[in-house]
Amino acid sequence: MAWFKRSAAGVTTATDEKREAPDGLWLKCPSCKASVLTKDLQENLSVCPKCDYHHRLGSEGYFGILFDQGIYEELDADLISLNPLNFKDTKDYGDRLRDARAKTGLRDALRSAVGNLNGFPLVVACMDFDFIGGSMGTVMGEKIARAVDKARALRCPVLVISRSGGARMMEAAFSLMQMAKTSAKLSLADREGIPYISLMTDPTTGGVTASFAMLGDLNLAEPGALIGFAGPRVIRETIKKDLPPGFQSAESVLESGFLDLIVPRHTLKETLARLLSHLRP
Amino acid sequence: MATPPIALSKAETAWLDFEKPIQELEEELSKLRQIQDKGKSDVSGPIRAMETQIQKTKKQLYSQLTGWQKVQLSRHLDRPYTLFYVEHMTTDFVELHGDRCYGDDKAIVGGFANLEGQSVMFIGHQKGINTKMRQYRNFGMANPEGYRKALRLMKLAEKFNKPIVTLVDTPGAFPGIEAEERGQAEAIAKNIREMFQLKVPVIVVIVGEGASGGAIGIGVGDRVLMLENTWYSVISPESCSSILWRSWDHKEKAAEALQLTADAMLKHGLIDEIVPEPLGGAHRDREGMAKTLRATLLRHLQELQALDPSTRIEKRIERFASMGVYGHAS
Image (tube, each protein chain N blue to C red):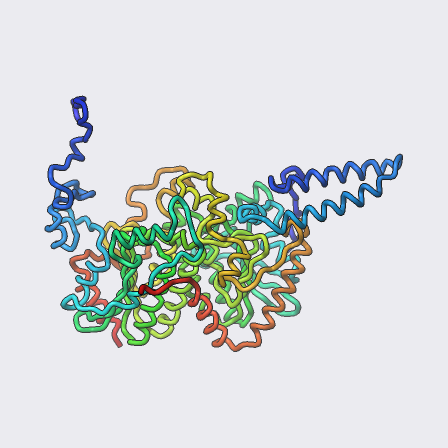
């Protein structure tokens, strides 16, 4: 709270929100509020150098972290969402898809790839939150299903990195059935002894959590990630009470017994390598 | 177990807003009948005419229901729920309780029953039949222990080679603090995965509301059927409206956009069959509805039991794995 309020015409920016640098060069950490050079943040795997807050990272970032020399082969890159229901809310879903593609340069909210992690093959499917909130439509479900099939064919582990608000409403029941489709394929991987690792990052909620994200042989999460079935707002509205501090954080989900491990991004590759070495025949 | 006495809601609440034309005609008809009963004048002609008109109006009205109107019918307070169906379709029902882990959820019930000479595991959401029972049943919104009880019973059925029938009718899995802490998401996820590998036949019937994860948590099977006036989607029209239009007022529009009716679901290849309801909805002839459903279940069971378990599992996985629509970038 400022003691004095500046009332001069036109100046309404609160001191906290003042930005003195052009957009993009600096970034304010939402956790510690410190200003960080965007370049520094990127070089630090999008983890705040001051407070270790894990900023959102997309598929390109994770592929770079995980695959040896950053080399990988992308899978099913040509799959695109259609608008099978001609869904229209305040905006036509077809337009929404086109805008999301233009904005992000991505085709949908998940990319999958195969490569090596410390010399051993691994299939990775990773979400991109910037694409309609990482929401799961048919393309995401199909790509995960195929990623699992690829791992089954190669008899190598599969890792799914989730960052999603849940199902994509604009694909309605098609989207719902992706929960079943992905879990169906995982039931086969499970039966065949193919290791499946789920990494939940901020946020992982809804139909994504209630299907493949919670089905890992190992369930991992990034520090501080929000993980839940229902979103905090829905729960608050239902029970008409404030939620306890830290509720649905990775740390409390671990305490409830649903995570094996919380893994900071800096140790992700090393930790996965160690874990996978234990699962090898 | 005896069926609890059924207290049908009062006539004035039993009619939905869009049924007003029928309600008015029905009122006319009962007036005419009163006159006839008094015996002073013969109005049997007008009565017959009125009856014909009512039938005609009903047929017309119910043949062109909107998505939202079907949602309303699916939620009608007099609709039959799981325990009613089990009582009226089977004999020797024994309800089994508990998830062997935390508790006994009242929003999902289950147990063995005898369906035409064979033991079948019935599992379903259960809503309450009056205000007190609706609270007791948590309005059909299960907690994780409900899904875990369901899975325990399914595994029990599998162990003794008994087919499984699940009846889905839920406004959603319960979104509460404890539900989250006890792993609502994990419970649903595990059910979905495990149901794919069940060695016994599994038939799923949406008998009321099929809301999202709460529905699909007991919704994987060799056959997925929907009663005529039910809905199945990723979200309720109200919540969809509140998220996409930022207001609750667009529920009719949301219901249309979601294409959540049995007709649409069949058209999109997401369900296998629509089970017809009595004219005006399942609640207009509850016993008749149970009879139709019973015959439908028997037919599917017979087909499924002719297959060997590994073929059933393979087909079940193939069916769900083929769901969805996508294209290829040029």
